[in-house]
Amino acid sequence: MKIKNQSKGFTLVETLVAITILIVSIAGPLTIAMNGLSSAILARDQITASYLAQEAVEYIRNKRDENALQGSGWMTNISQCVSQECTVDVQSGGNPQVCGGGGCDPLKYNETTGFYNYSSGDISRFVRSVSLTNIDTDEVQIVVTMNWVTGVLSRSFVIKENIFNWQ
View 1 (cartoon, rainbow, N blue to C red):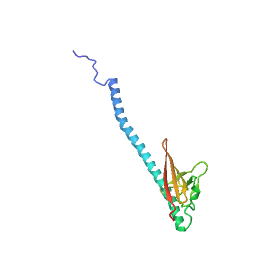
View 2: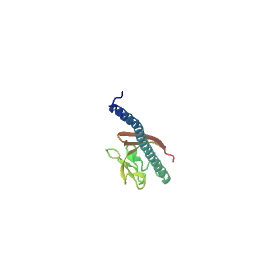
View 3: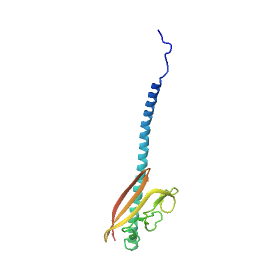
View 4: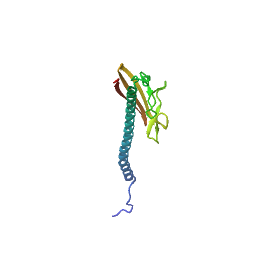
């Protein structure tokens, strides 16, 4: 005997199970992609901050070398950064400037030139401060501190390097 009210479609429970399986199968790869993207952004910012810190070290080293070539004292035009936070604007080529009481200003990014500076462009997420510490009369330690925010994470690191009076 055949029952006349036999259903040939999906039941509500079968439909809900199918939708749940579909959502779980899509959510996993999307979560992995989202984590990969945020890691890539964080890595990009860390690399940029590292290059900006190294740029500041090279700037101070270059000022020391210029002083030696001009016959000036080796700390001329950089001594204001001893035991104080300073900014160095590599693009302008000027001397380091002592930061105000509220800390150093953020760097600006100029999209036209592709460089970071303090004079033109949009305010970036990076704040760079440079300070010098006297070790003895012929040795100074350069300390560059980088701070930035990626998303909701505040990040920072410090690079230290010693330079010498080689005159």
